[in-house]
Image 1 (cartoon, rainbow, N blue to C red):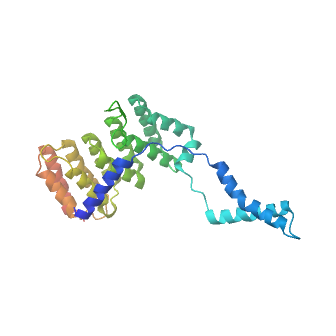
Image 2: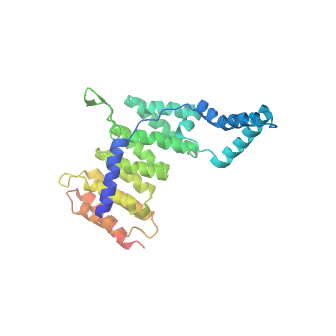
Image 3: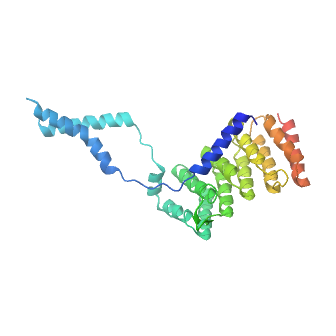
Length: 286
């Protein structure tokens, strides 16, 4: 991997570690917005009332309000709904969010069960956005977002993160792909990293070879003397799936180099054989 690419991905890793947050709080700003909206009309009304022969105060205010409303509508265009507003519209997602934020492992797993059912049934529109939001939160539980009591971490739930990564891979959006890259780069638990890599392969999204570069970066952070067998195998599977879903396959030396590292690394024969198999597939792809 080029040094510039490595530095860019390393910066993303550091940013993810320091900025992964909790659910945003809802702010009520209706009164402020109302005052801002009405202020131009009130000011123009006062000016017209002071002018000789001007319109009456009520007429000026009415006309000004109409003009101000028209100008505001023309300038702002359609309002983009926020994630907070989406949650407020759905009692089900409010409950899911609270379950995801619970400190209890079983409640978090219950939230994942509910989310899996929703994905099985098919999600779209705002439901997709809210589902991704909760899944990314759970996928970062204990890695990107750490809670401590008396100096000890109390929210290390690798099984929660692993299952959340699996479900993110089924969403199939740009946002879920980005979330999985963050999970793979910052999580220290091998089974979570392996699941994130495999899910990225299932998604099949690799713009400008960014996902392959991220996979290689995560692999290079491993100890070559004691590599995790599952992660090595998952990396080979991910590259295989990405190649199958990319027209013409993957024509990138970094992918070949990564597979060669696995094939000659300190891995079980099964893992090495998989890496060699994928190399042959890449060579013969057209």
